[in-house]
Image 1 (cartoon, helix red, strand yellow):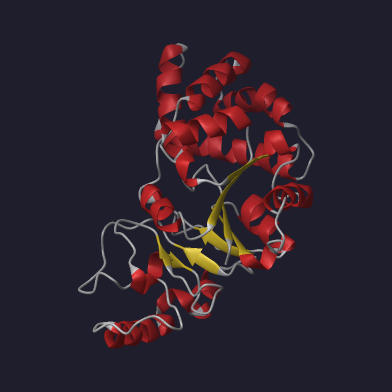
Image 2 (cartoon, rainbow, N blue to C red; image 1 turned 30 degrees about the vertical axis):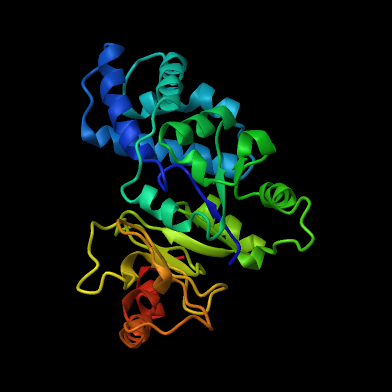
Length: 301
């Protein structure tokens, strides 16, 4: 594997946490009724409908900004100026950079091993600024943002433009099968990557969220430090990269630094722990998340 495309919102930066806080603070600021947790679910429902329309090229992002909060307020039974609230919402989002736990550690492990490409739907300046605020911008070699590209994920044109930039000046172009798309959206990330011939890793933060059919790997919510007695052993519930993928690399979400044992080379020097590492690796390969049985239970597509 040569390059990894990584979604931003709810994969690296916690958009959900931002929305809850902005609704709580914004409702108080605009003199609306007090925010209650169930209101967030209404926002997610209505916002997802609008973004799905964008993904189908039925709605522009500019139009979304005009109608989003009026749509949400109508669903909540609240009379308010949705356009004014949208303006507040976007300005606050521009300064929001709440990392998903474990995201920094993930990028630290991937950086230098693969070309890292941010792949996000949204305003270019906003997404870049948020990566800078979170100190994540330094990890990325390429930034593929829908506003700058001119089309949104999962459109094939988005990936056409991204790969054209990725391969500009390369004597040997990087093929889609040598890349991976990591994200939390079954439509914009997984469907887009699959239809383009990329490998895919679905980031499922919520256990009840079904994994899309056809994805290569499902990554669970970033767990806390839980390496067991052998800290060199990757954790199957939060790893992606099957044994045998290009490079033979297993990358983990969460705390801890990789060492040479996380990358398997044919001709590396034998180490006193190699025998145990190979045993653990073999056992891990047959454990849990790599088994298709687990994924099949989650698929409903």
